[in-house]
Amino acid sequence: MTKTARILVIAGSDSGGGAGIQADIKAITMLGGHAMTAITAITAQNTLGVTGVHPIPRDMVLAQIDAVVGDIGVDAVKIGMIGSAEIAHAVADRLEAMPGVAVVFDPVMIATSGAVLADADTIAAFGRLMRRATVTTPNLPELDALGGESAVTGMGAVLLAKGGHAEGAEVIDRLIGAAGEIARWQDKRIETRHSHGTGCTLASGIACGLGQGLALADAIARARAFVRVALKEAPGLGAGHGPMGHQAVRLDTPGDGPMLNQVTLGCGDYAASVAFYRMLGLRQIVDSPPRYARFETGGGATLSIHASDAGVSAATQVYFEQRDLDAEVARLKALGAVFLHDPIDQDWQWREARLADPFGNSICLYQAGEIRRFPDWRIDA
Image (cartoon, rainbow, N blue to C red):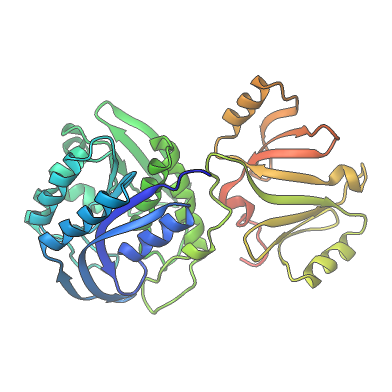
């Protein structure tokens, strides 16, 4: 069995379940890790705002950390709402005694609702945590409060500058080190008011990936994919900034191994096939008569039907989604696998490579991410 990554979250509690420890636990669990917690503050809040904050004493925060580290162990740490300068320095002391453990620091200062969650002294104490962190993940207002890119990277910190607060139809997130930009990700903005907990979820997703052995850029890419699907799956709760849909992200974020999440079956009668799979209870999400339809199952897998001139059997395909398609194709070729075609960017926004098993069954290795379940042409959007 693959070892379960042990992720310690040092953060505040959100009584509304949208952000903080609650979002952290949900993200880490859905990504296959084991979440442990050291709660720094208890908040009374909902989708409309924060109505009360009760700080946890420094010694109790440290007692929580010591309890889990001494028994269960830790593979990565995620830090969110820290509570006070005193706790920030105390946590830094503990982290300096854990060399080799990955740390993701989300410098929480202001809640989505606008409530201030860190005073000037606490922000000033963030320097020690940023220097110890594997990556620090501020949004743009938080980055400004920290002194900007040069101030953060100048102290030796690696920075993921999140672009969600910038204007424009696309969101750009940039990974930056002392020598400049390392990587960037750019995606279409998801318009929704149900975005409470995006920063917490992203940071916890990155920490989980690092704890599982992913490289930093790969952990960020997977965590971003998780956040985007969770935003699209937001259940629409509350009258304000509602929670995301962590619970609905199941088969959208491949890890190191292939993810079996899509099958295409051949059909001879498009209308009859569509009617049959609707009758089974599958939700149709793509309708391209007379040749292609895609359905979504309750667990998040997708099934397509395809009418092919080559016949029903020729249209049948099993799809394994890969975290890094090109690297996997190279690995398999080195082992002697013969591909029908190398990775290709398709018109339907999937990147695909195809091969056959020893008995001629058609196998597609691919990357699609959110486009598998949420293409721009999704018919129930």
